[in-house]
Image (cartoon, rainbow, N blue to C red; front, side):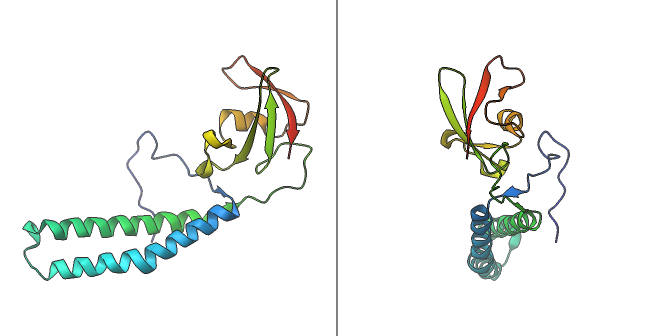
Length: 164
């Protein structure tokens, strides 16, 4: 099966970012396994049990159980699609230019901050993990230690201090 096409909207036409770390891919595989082997069979049993009560039109529990089963099936399709198109981020040995999977320390003369550049599905700005598609991540890619960068629509100039 394929993931259903959604009506055009603000975020519906955005392509998902296929970049994943090996840990995130393993986590998704475990979640998929849990959904297929634990959640879906239990939800299907519940739908079957409630269907035996009859009168589907007024059986609210049956309607809710069917909705839950549909949600589980949609989750399975989404994760399978994400894993099928995944590109695993291989930590690069080359440390002279910034790439995906690198931790970059930048400073503006007053403060220094370190950011790990990964795919958009794993971002957590509070923990210093940014996407390669974010304004800062995109500005950093391909630059070397000592280079100065400026984010579009921002006056602050950052200098790359360290790449690891």
